[in-house]
Image (cartoon, rainbow, N blue to C red; front, side, top):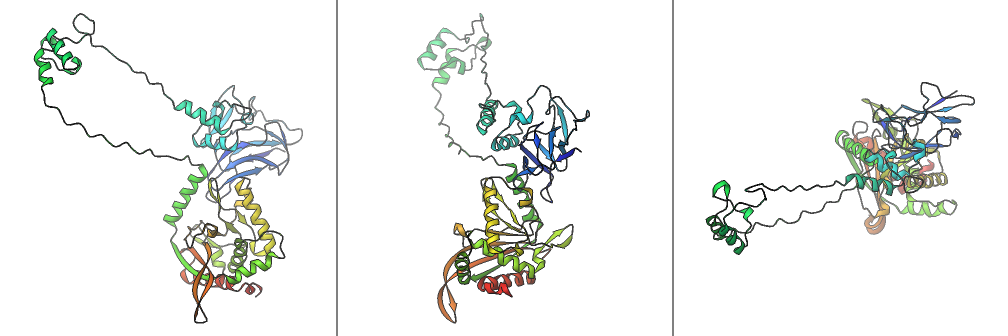
Length: 453
C-alpha cells in the first residue's frame, strides 16, 4: 500500500519547513528508516527518514520550497503498485508546490532529483526565493558558487546613457551665440551651454558671457564625507525563525532570574574520579545534566510547560543542550536523562554535538525537550542570563569555574566557584519554587553523594 511522505512537524510552533534536497531520486528504491530528504526548520537542519519501504514516486516539491507542515510531497509505492493517474506526471517536477501550497505548472524542466544541489546551495537558493532549475551547475551538482554566480549575473543591470542635442539655428546642434560671445567664452574657459542667453531665441550675447565671467566666485560646496560601507550578512531561515522565537519569548514570557554561586570543588573531584572508570571523555556539562535531571525529579514544577493557558507537567525529564553551530544555535535533547548513567550521558552528548555540527540531527534529536542547559563556561564567561525556550518553564545558564576568595569556616580561602543563573517563566514557576530547585541543585553540585539519597 502506498505511503504518503509529508512535511513533518518537529516542534509545537512549527508551521512550515524548507525542503533542502532529496537524498533519493524518483523511481529509486528506498528502505524504511534510511535518510530520504533534508529539511530545514526553525530549530535545525535534519534528515528525514523514509516512512516505509518501496519506490519513491509522485514528487511534488523541489529543493528550496517552503512547505506547510502535514502537506504530502511524495509517496512511496509498495510492490506491484503504480502511480495513480491523478497524481502521475511525465516529469516529477512538472507541478512544483511553492509558497503555501499554490501550484505552478511548468514544462520541460529538470526534476528536483536531477538537480541534486548541495545543502549550502539549496539553503542559499531558498533564502533568495530562487528556483534552482534556473541555475546551470559547473559540474554535476549545483554548488554554492553556482548559485552565487547566478545571483550576481541577475543583479547586474546594463545602464544605457542617452544624450540628446538641442536642435537650434540651422540644425547643427550648436548653441546659438554671437561671434564675440564665443570668443569671450573661450578666453574665460566657459561653456556656452552653461550660460543663459538673453538674445533672440535665447542666443548667448557678449554681455551674458561677461556677466558670468565677472561674477564673484561662490564658496565651494562642502564635500560630504564618504558614506560608511555597511556589510550585511545573509541569514538562514533557521536563524531568522529562531530570532523571531527568541523575540517572542523575550516579549511575551514574563522572565525572572535567580542567581546562585556554588563551590565546585567536589564537582571537580567527582569528574576526576568518574573519569578513571569511564571510557568516554567526561565534561562538566555531563555532570550538570546528571544533577539537573535529579533536581527536576524532586521539583517537577520546573519540568513543566505553559500550554494554552495551562501548566502541563511533563512525565519525562528530557534535557536540551544549547550547541553553537555555523548557522547559530541548535538545542539537541538528551531524552530521559534522569535514567542514564554518566557514561551514557557522555556518549549521548558527544553523539548529539557531532550530529549538530554536521547537520545530521534527526527529528527525535531535537524534539521533546522539557528543560534546557546553556553552558558558556568554556568561553570564559563569568555569568549570564539566558532566555527561556518556550514552552519550557526554565533554562539554566552555566558560567566558568573560577578561583575566588570566599569565607570557609569563618576564614578567607581561595575556592573554585561556579555561578548558576536560572531563568524562569513566571506563569509556571514562582520565586519560591525556583529558589527551592536552585537550592537542591546547589547542594547536589557541592555534595554529589546526595545523588544517592
